[in-house]
Amino acid sequence: MKVRSCIAIFLAISVNVANAEGGSCPAGYYPIGDRGISGCAPIPNYGSSSPGEIEAALSWEDRWGSIAADYAGGKFGVSRSLTSKDLAQAAALQDCVNEGGTACKVDLTYSNQCGSIAWGLSYAATARAPTLEEASSMALSLCGNRSTECKVYYSDCSYQMLAK
Image (cartoon, rainbow, N blue to C red; front, side, top):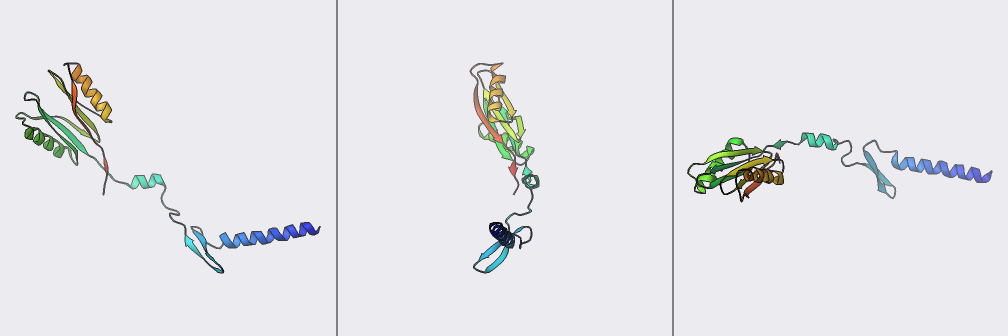
């Protein structure tokens, strides 16, 4: 009987000590202190938005790329990661002219994905796709359907960027 009484008293004291340590602070706070001095401190990020809500609050900006070509002259120009379709096309046309093209025309414009140009002996092809590998493979395939010795001469991606 004495053993049971001792165990009951020990458990009662243990529960009260545990409640005093963790139960004295409101939700969102944890107990701090040592040697008779105690208090409560806020739990970092307690009650903050869930990861899904944080991602939804982020703002993404589209990015554009373009490929312009003077096929008769064998020249092309490119642009990448620009903030609008018009800027991307103008920059690719200017790059084509800077490379020596005299009859440059926009052949491909892409947004938030990748673009590629493959050139063969008698034909060139452009393609866009979600990944660099897919865009390059598509451009090579299109070129190879109408020409021989096709090679990828340019491929790059213009993906969305996190707004500042």
